[in-house]
Image 1 (cartoon, rainbow, N blue to C red):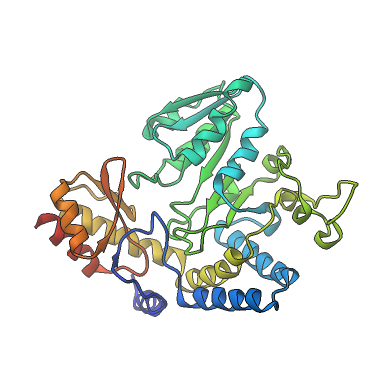
Image 2 (spheres, one colour):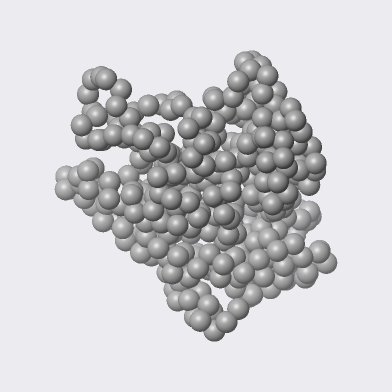
Amino acid sequence: MDDSSRTRLRTAGQQFSPGSTYLNTATHGLTPHRALRALERHTREVATGRFSPVDTDSAIERVRTAYARMSGVSADRVAIGSHVAQLVGTVAAGLAPGSEVLLARDEFTSVVFPFLARNKDGVRVREVPLEHLPEEVGPGTTLVAVSAVQSANGAIAPLRDLVGACADHGARLLVDTTQSAGWLPLDAARIDYTVCSTFKWLLGTRGAALLTGTTEALAALEPQAANWYAGGDRWESLYGGPLRLAEQARRLDLPPVWSAWISLEESLSLLEEVGIETVGEHGAALGDRFREAMDMEPTGSAIVSLSVSEDAMERVDRAGITTAARDGRLRAAFHLYNDESDVDRLVKALKG
């Protein structure tokens, strides 16, 4: 990493005030000061009656454009929602009876449940180990759905092989980037669908999610909750028929949680100032530093999971270090506001 990148990281780090050694971004990210100020302004406007919903439209479009830029797609291929499960559900709803969906075993349930809920309609779900996903794609596979980075353990999906395998067999690919967007660069232009909740590595607040898709894949989706915000002219789509939805991805929009988008605009701008590649290099290096200190092989992931004793978990808590327990293991996550001293503090607490 060059000096310019380090300077950008240090400058961005001044936007955060953690109350502990915070290693839990995989649960939720910290709110940057600039995003907090935007939220405070919004709350005051609501409290005093000065808030105008129409004024948020331009901010949401700026977020849509920024996210498109970060994802390598055009803004007209980005739809908005509140939660990943909503967006995955839209994809699941379009599957015909007899479709086979291939999933990674122990995948996060927001990716799994929308497809399992279609079992009664004849949609078949098959779960296999993450590393075997590409070789399990076959002529009968309709869709593969997987997180780019696994929530439970930080394992990185073999996306390049999956893109090739799906193309070879005519299957579509859905990738959940909730645990990767913000630190792991991903070219969404080559992927049929991506979905992302933004309150983790993108440093937003809960209530904003995004869907991208190829032109062909998006055309296959039908709105499952058609609403005024997806109207061609939102503020002329408030009452009565006929149905008059926008074109392309925006016809899939869901009504926004305004506060979430107001803060997200500030968070995305901060991440773009630093650079996703820089954030990723930094977080992955910290993750590997931790893995090596715990006698584990480096993987290049910013999320690390390992089995520890109850005593060790208690020492971590007493040391004022915030981590998570997932799937019976300690999970630590390293973002732009962490540094080597955070890793060393965690290692010291674990080793006693």
